[in-house]
Amino acid sequence: MRCATEGIMYPYNALKELKDSLLFGNDSVSGHGSKAPYVEIPHAAWSVCRDELDCAFASVRGLEPSIVFVLGPLHKGPISADDGFTVYAPEDGVLKGSDWEIALEVPSDLRNLVVQNDDICSEECSLEIAAPYLALLFPKARVCHLLAPGRNEKLRTIVEIARRDFPGALFFISNNRESGCADMWKEVFQ
View 1: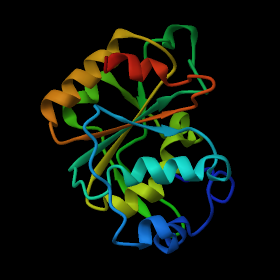
View 2 (view 1 turned 90 degrees about the vertical axis):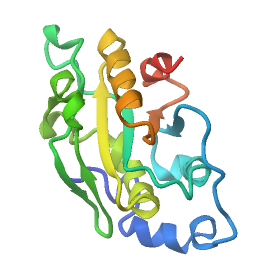
View 3 (view 1 turned 135 degrees about the vertical axis):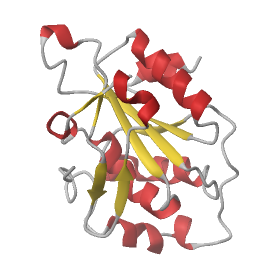
View 4 (view 1 turned 30 degrees about the vertical axis):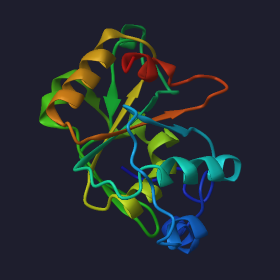
């Protein structure tokens, strides 16, 4: 999948900027690991939420998940009137920025529950804003990015399977707290 918002929602050379920042460049600052079922991250440009992003990712620094799930809203859809219950994911492959890359993969256990489509997912910035952090902190982890246009039972099924089959997985919910655009993902963890 191609980057759509690099240089707009977050800077070019974002990984270098993160490595140079006090938060991630200083080994005395480390996360404690998260005991919560997910970490909520903001769904906005770095210029608006950089401090909040830094704190959220610092809280999980030092963890070594084999897979990371980034759950977000689908702002483009539903694509048709019959599409209200579809969950989307980018096609498996690599998402690359100017100085970072992450491996995208929908686990086989979830493939029958999602539609993989780069065109639909390409301009949804929930993953792209977080990707430089993921590349820095979890360079070996696979990333599963799932987007939903609203509430449906499929979300609960997806989270139940992911938690059961990947007990060491790390979950991020990309949410704009003002609009609550990803609250449907938060609800399935309760």
